[in-house]
Length: 330
Image (tube, rainbow, N blue to C red; front, side, top):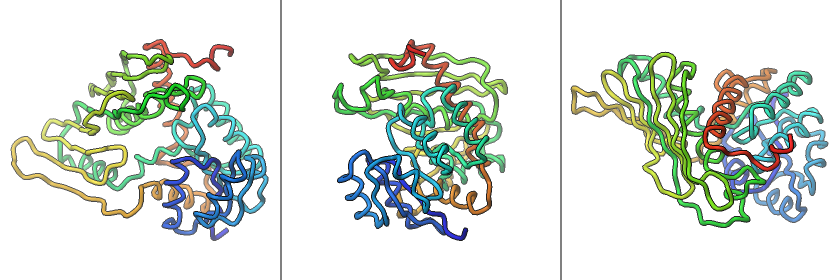
């Protein structure tokens, strides 16, 4: 295999952004798309040059030319769709969060391991050049010992109880949609197990979480102050404070800039990622490379990190009393 043939399951906004970036990925080609609507699949395939448009997800996963499938459906369908792909021998890159809770992911991992198939959560932030530069600065001791991490992601979404963001049946709410990013950011740079966690929340009229604040205390002494919202616009920065300085990433989850500040200097170091893509190409390149190497797991975004993320999100949801309707019957 010299080229990895991609399929895309779902034709929404994120699928569109991913498809826009895929042509920039080396040794990758979009060959098929699957949708619940024949019209949607055909329009998407025509727009992005896919060879085949499948009117069902089942037809997509049965396509013999497809090597890996990007799953871009709403959160509550990730487990079902990923398992469908795995059971038909397809590798999977699944949009975050890869599952609604840890139990879902454990089931998915078991199937992927039994079938010896690649599976990775599409935590695209972890693959960005700004994140790599931040890691480099920290490794060089530029900000000393890390002490505190602050990150928030908030925007004001138009309220519509029928839409995904506010629909509890679709695992709506701020935490799973955008709150995962501050959490992932803190776990990446704290590099320690969590010793304690606290969280508070306000709810929308549909019962999903509208705004959350959550604090993490790590075993190595690092603390994190995190927040997310569908009802308020925040600064949306990620900041890592050390003993000698701090690093700031504006719009950290999709950042193109990183700034290094020293407490004893007015000089500011900066790094700019001058990409012309949305930024989804980096995770797609990782998945493509690993498939070509015959590997089933990423060292940057291994399954253990996904499990850790979901475990902490489960804990946050317990703290704020958020259970989705489809979880109550289990």
